[in-house]
Structures are given as C-alpha cells and as structure tokens.
Length: 620
Image (cartoon, rainbow, N blue to C red):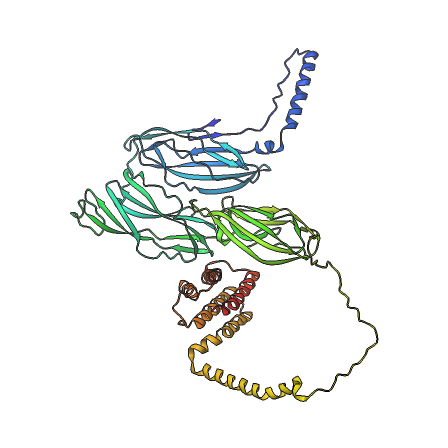
C-alpha cells in the first residue's frame, strides 16, 4: 500500500522470489541445505498458472480530488486500472455511501496508452462526482472491478467534511441564486463517436419545501440526428436529498433515454419541457410569479432544460482482418448450432448471439460462408431487451436457416467479428470458431434425395406397330363439338372483355381495386434504377401502402400504419400477415435514422414486399 496526501491505492505485486545475500562465514553445509529449498521454490514458480502471471501486472487504485471538503462541495472519485496490455474491464461496482452521495451512477470514462522505456502501459479511468451532504468523517469503502473475469478491489478512503465557514478559505465569488425548482438534462458521455450509446436523464431539482404532485411533457422531444430508445421502464430512483451551493435540494430522475448519434459533426439536443403541478408550504417564486404568490396553493409550473450541443466524432478505421456489424459498446459474440447431426432434407439453425450493452438495435446481421450443399433461407432476427436496465442492454440473436441437400460432414469456416468498445476506445476481435455439421440419411424415408448423381434418360428400342381406329360419326367426335362451341366462346369472351373494360373506365372503386397489384408491382420494379438504398425503402413504403389503400378503397394519403393495420383486421386478414405488413412499413418509416443498409438486406426486403402483395391479393 502506498499513501500520499490525496491518493491511496491497492497494488497487486508480481510474484517474486527473495534471494537473500549469503552472510560471511557461511559453510558449505549451509549452502547445501539451501539448495533443495531453491529447487522446490523454482518448481512451485513454474507450476503457477499462466493467467496468474499475466494478472500480476494489473493494478487497481482509487483516489479522490480532496480528502478535506466543505459541506455542499462536490469532489471527484477516480478509479484507475493499470495494465501492460489491453484488458476486458467491467464498470466498477460502487459501494453504498454514508454521509456522501453520488450525483450520478454513470461514470465519465477514458483510456490512454503510453510507452515508457520500451514498456507499454494501458490506463483505464472511471470518474464519479460525489457530493458532501453531511458533516463529519466518512469512509468510501472498497470499489470492486472485474478485470478479465477476475475481481480486484481498492483500499477504503477517508473523507472529512467540515462546515462551509471552516478552514479560513477566501470567500468565493457570489454565484447567481438557483431557482427553487429547475430541470436539467444530464448526459453520460460528452464526446461520443457515431453510434455510441449516450444515456440521457431528465432530472428535476426542487427545494425541500416543494411538493411535486404530478407532471406531464408539454411538447414532443425531437432528437434530430439521434436514434432514440426509451429507458423509462428501468428502475427510477426515488427523490434523493442533495446540497447545491450550500442549499438543500431534492433530486428526481423523471425520464431516461438512450441516444445513439447517427452522423458526425455538431449535433444539438433540444430542451426538454414539462409542466409540473406543485404545492409549497411557503412562498414559491420563479420568473413568472409575484412576491406574494404561493403560500400553500397548488399551481402549475412550466420548466425546460438547457439545450445541449455535442461534437460527434467518427469511429477509428477498423482492422482489415474482421467483419463489421455496426456494434458499439460492451458486447460478447457467440455462434452455435441448433443441432450437430441432422437428417438429409431437415433444417439446422446457425445461431449468432450478441449479448451486452450498447447500440443493440442498430447491429446488423453478420454474413458467413456456408457449404454449397446447404440451401439458405431468410434469417430470423430477435431482440431480447433488458427492460430493467438503466441503459440499452440485452441480447440480439440472428438465426440462419440451412437445409441439407447432400449427406456427409461439412464445416462452416471460422469468422472474426469486430466490436468497437466505447470505454476502451478501440476495436475488439471476437473469433468465432469453425462449426461442423454431420448430415445423415434417414433409413425410414420412402423418398431419398440423390447425391451428386446425374440422371440419364435411356431411349426404348424396338419395332413400332401402327393400329388404325374405326371410322366414327362426325357428331360423336370431339373436334365437331369444339368447332361448334368455338364461335360461341369467342363471342362470350369478347362481351366479357368489353364489359370489364367499360367498368374500368366508369367505376373508379373497381378500377383502383383491379389495377392495385399491377401498379404496386411496377413501383417495385422501378427500384432497379434507384441508387440510394434509403430511397428504395421509400418506394417500398409507397407500393405497399398504396396497394392496400386501392384494394380497401381508402384515401390515397392521411392514413398511418396503425390505420392500415386496423383496416386489415376489419377484413379478417390473418394476424401474422398484419404483423409482417406493420413491421415492413415501420422499417421503411424509420430507415432514414439508421445507417445505410446493405445490398443484401435491401434485396430481402424487396422480396418480402412482393410476397406480402401476393398474399394480400388472396385475402383482401
């Protein structure tokens, strides 16, 4: 343990063998007695596991910006992890505090790499802002950190909190008085990269004499340039007591969101506005109230947070030896098979699971190389989100469905997936090992699939015999009646075609219904001339929605996705088909906020649109 004025740290030293110097006059017998001990020590050192030796260079320490603070002052708790090589480091586990408070449980993170005298060193920093809320001497307990799955902890730190007037410091410059009630937008990251998760908390601060009955959002919060996910289902802490500039306040988290910037440059986050219904035992004053307003009366107060501007950088250039899937955060990637042995003609699922926290909804499907003896079908994608987490986290799963056409043993080659770790600020490689599938024949199958066999057609050789049929009466032959019915059929066909064409021009509802499929199919065919992938989704949305409007005689515009789904349900369309229509239209509506999709994804969505039109044609 090393102790300085403001820093205490726990150091895990390397394994050492202490070779004491030989004192004068030592006999040869003394050296002989020491030799077996040295041999045993060397054997024990060699038997130490390799990961123990690697872990010995990890150092975890904690420090604070000041060990003596005044009541109501803020100070910083720094947790530092030192290592000679990159490590997998989890977010520190914060202890419960007595007399001190965390202003936010989300740290400010940073990392740096240095090379001193040929020795590399990685430094990971986690900074937390604390508030001195009570007078006295308090202790910050040990902070626990997981490094490569192994737990480390720091030494406790003692903090002494004095009254505001104690210490003989020079008086601070007079700060403007805070209002009795105000709204703040607090962000977990101030300098993000494109696609990184930013946890945004809408925090209400109010004096202890104010009672907040309820609140509601007064205007829509438009976060242009960000993909936004609602985290309000996560556990929100109850209002806590804090001290700001020596004045006691209450702090309550009203809403929590995950923001993912979709482009680089300066992005603005607008103000968040609410209307709160409050009651106070004494006078409540703001810029809109008089001196004698309040006195226990209930009133509505309009509050808005300050707008924020962030400068978003682009992620660094990825390595060339891996596949990007647009994953930013702390993720683990795993690939498995639903079964190792399948029968000929049966299906097997290749399951790719991505688990962790970050931009879970923006991760794209990895592309693997499969043996030619398998037919691939449209993959399935599911997201199992952790609703109780204070950030966007959970599991995203991709299932590639393979159908075996030939018997034998086949191997899916290994693959490397790149994930950008926004804490360590570098790409991590996740190596997916090779998978082996054994395809066997079903002995009970009545029909067997040929394996690499060319089908040969052999002509039948032999003499040809001719037989003459007896002469029949003309009206008993089929061609007589066919020749008789041909004029009548032609007349009926012509009359029906004329009636159909006349109705197309005179009945607008009938015309829209009959020409809906051809018009939608023509729109989908025009996508081959469009270069922008997002413009293609606009055409897909127009084709599907206009087809449904024409078939159901709806207005050309003014109907939402919910309206379309409700109209389909009224026509007794199958619920799975309605869900597929809703999913495709919602993807087309939100595609402009996401990174450019791949050509393969666009082709799959075009095929899905054509299938939907074909299935809807049979039901509406």
